[in-house]
Structures are given as structure tokens and as C-alpha cells.
Image (cartoon, rainbow over all chains, first blue to last red; front, side):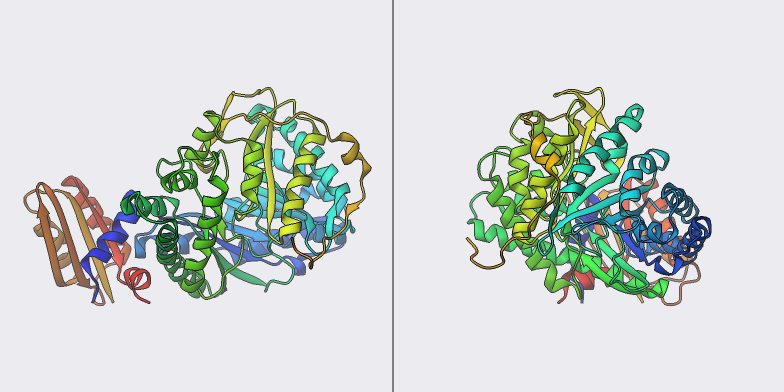
Length: 452
Length: 89
């Protein structure tokens, strides 16, 4: 028999604490769409997505109603388009338009997979696709792009790192009239997961089945509220226990929704991404969880330790609650998408250097950080290289999604609206890494023994 | 198949009547009701069997939310599985 307190707890989580399923993402393989004629290839891509994901949005809405739980996004992730561009040749932006058209037809919020995996080097299609990213992002709205430039096994492709600095700058310029929003849809990764349901890094890896459903859960507000109720006297290990229990409940809900979606759509259930994904909404912030643990402001001394505890406890609680776990799994620390992070940045408590340290223990990387418009491509490449090095050495996923907003300087505010949020332009270290970036080549893969 | 209807908000006359009326209209059989009033704050949890529902589940849900919000309260209509999933191992 159900307990009334349990029922009210769940209702309160949804009504007052912003509990939701962040995304149901359908991964679709496009390998069978490759054709040596690019126009035929694009048509096949459109047809397959429109067919496989035809009922995705309607099913999501139906499940939302049945369980009374908001499902914020319905998305599609596809095979890295560089693989198709390699077969067909031609202008990869044609694929971008085909993907945008498919996204419009099925009504999803985002489509990801304008991607290339170049950690060890470039093959046919990779260079063309990377060069076309700024144009593709400026000519589409719902398409997201990711490039994997490094991995623990392969090292870091520094030629790709140098290119990505330029790509980000060019995307900022091409979308200068829209606060450089093109950059919000481009992420540069190290150790990219192949089953990530979250944007902008979602793509459908080549080792994945033909079609699959992945679910990303959320709930920073629920964790923060649970810690607030617990009070200030608990030992820090008891805080970890509360996070574990809360993450368990959140993830069980994700498991239920994912299983139901996969059964209704007749598609295998892939993974649950055990994530704490913040939104700009008040009360849905990861920074506020860290502050609830006892920090005056996120970014101050103690932040990295609190985040490490949080990230680990979320995984421990979530793993037991779900059948199969994957994706990014952990706490996200985007600046523009998190009200607490924005405030901390405005107050000067949170700097890019501190965020970089935090990425060593969180689930992703430097995310949604607004930089001054005059930041050079080399500086952005330097930031990408640093972040990729943290991921490579620690065998974890790291990523960089920064927005060098054209015409904006430190302290100016951007506002993208929706889940992308907004926030202050943060100061960046301006000592130039130009010579290092212009060297090119690769950083060799690190030792996996003698760990110190 | 059972659903849990939760209503919270400022106490007012006729909340239970309204909710049970909507259930009866669509042939949802009420199995259990628990309600508490603390000060002016009203909370009610109702369990109903919806296996012989004469309309879509989403229609019942929408009508309930609409009807209750007109009285100034908030209603949640949720399938029981979500509670079992979250609170049972």
C-alpha cells in the first residue's frame, strides 16, 4: 500500500522543486543512409529520421500526462555526420539543412550529431565537416554540433584543437546579430560518450544499435530542498547519504519513463544518464546545492570538494535505481543555465580557473561560459587543450562550450532565453598560448600506470 | 490500473464533491480517500481504479486539473506506478 507521505513527497518534488525528466533522446543510426550522391544521402537521412521518430514527441506528451511528470525535451541524436560526408563528399551543410527539416517535421526540441570524432586524426569528411560547422550553426536553429578532439587512449589531436578555436570564433561572428548564439550549439569534447542524451554533445555512436531510447533525468532543486530540510548540523558524510537517496528516487522515475517510452515506441531502451542538469529557473541550480552544503558562494574555497561529493553520490544513488547507466552521468556546471552560477560569477566568486578545477570532479566541463568578444581563437584553443588534458589524464569526459560574444566585454550581460539562460561575460586570462597552439601535432596518450 | 489524485491548496467548500463528481462522470471508482486540513491548508489524496474508465486517461487528468484550479487549488493526477517506482525497492 502506498504511504501518503511518499505520495505528497513526490507531488512536492514536481510542484515546488522543479523535478522533471530533462530529455528523452532517440538515437538513430544513419549508417545505412550513406550514398555517394549527397542529395540522395540527405533525402535518406530525412526519411529515416521522420520515420523512426515520427511518434517520439506524441509519446513523450502521453507519458507526461499519465505520470504527471514534466518531460522537458524530446530530442534526436544521429550518427556523426562526418561519416556520411566522407562517403558522399560535397558540402556538409546540406546535411545540416536535412537534419533541421527532419527536426521541424517531427517537432523535436533539438537534433544532435553534426559531429566528427577526430581524437587520433582526420579521415574523409572530417575536415570538411569541421570547417562547415560555423555556417551550419548559423543557418539552422535546432541542430547541435560536437567534435571529439581527444581521448585517454589516443591522446589529444592538437590540429583539431587549433581548428576548433577558429570554428568557435567564426560561429560567434556569423551569429553576432543573435548574441553569438551559434557557439551555444557547438561543443568540443574529450572522451565523448556515444550514448549521451544531452545537447550539445549528443550523437549516436557507431557501436550503438540502429535505434535506441536514452533518458536524461534532472532534479537539482530536489536535492537542494532535501539538504535544506536536513539542516546545518549534519556531518558531510550524512549529506552524501541524503544525496544518494534523493538521486535514487529521481533515477527510478527516469527508469520508469524510459522503459515506458521504449515499449510504446517499439525501440530498445538504452541508458539513463544520471545527471543533475540545472535550468535557469529559480530553485533548479547545482550551485545552490553546493551553497546548501555550507559554502557562502559557489566558487569559493571548498567548492571542488563539495562538487566531488555531489557528483559521486549522484552516481552511487542512481546506479542502483536503473538497469543501464551511461551518457555523462553526474553534476553539470554550466554558467548561463544555472541561476546560482550566474550570481556567483557576477559576485566575482566564480572564475574560469575555478570552473576548470571543478571540471576535474564533475561530469562534463567548461559549459556555457560567456567570454569577451575580443577573445582570440588561440586563447579558446588553449582553453580547449587544458580541458581536454584534464579529461584525458583522468579518464573522464570533459568538454568546452564557450561563447565569445561579439561586441560584448567583461561584465556585460547576455540573455539567450529558455533553457540556455544568460549571464555575465566572464574575464579570461589574456596571456597568449599562440606559439603552442600553432605547433599542431598531437599530445601523446598518458600512462595508465604509475598514477600519482 | 489505479491512479492517485492529489489536491493541495487553500481549503474551500466542495473540493471533495468536485473531485468525486469528475471521477463518477468518467466511471473512475474511488477506492480510498485521505484528507487533512492544517489551518487553512487542505491536502487530499484519492486513489481511484481507472480500469473501466469511459474516457481517455488524459481527459480525466485535464478535467480534474481544470475543475480544481477553478476553485483555486492544484490537482495532480498521476498513475500509481510512479509512486511505486520512486518509493519501493
